[in-house]
Image (cartoon, rainbow, N blue to C red; front, top):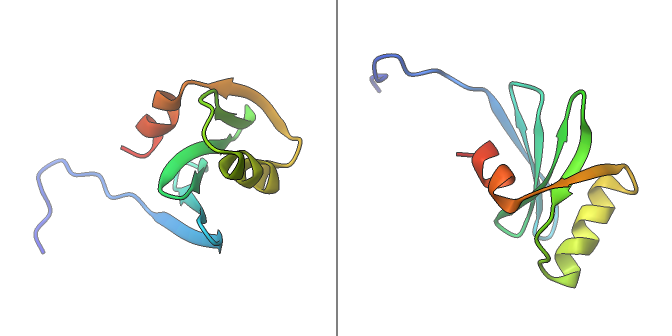
Length: 86
């Protein structure tokens, strides 16, 4: 497989935590938490845990709490999380 010119190679690790709960660990140290197929929270070094300000389902809220506990320090717009994984 040929690489595109100037293509950066990223190392990522995908970990299934349970039914419809997944964490994507990026080589930058950022961890992005997915509920179903949607990125809804993250751990960012120097900032801590952040979650989406969008209200999804009660189940997604429960998933975020199971992953981050009460360590969420702030919220960000959903577009913030979408852009983390683009």
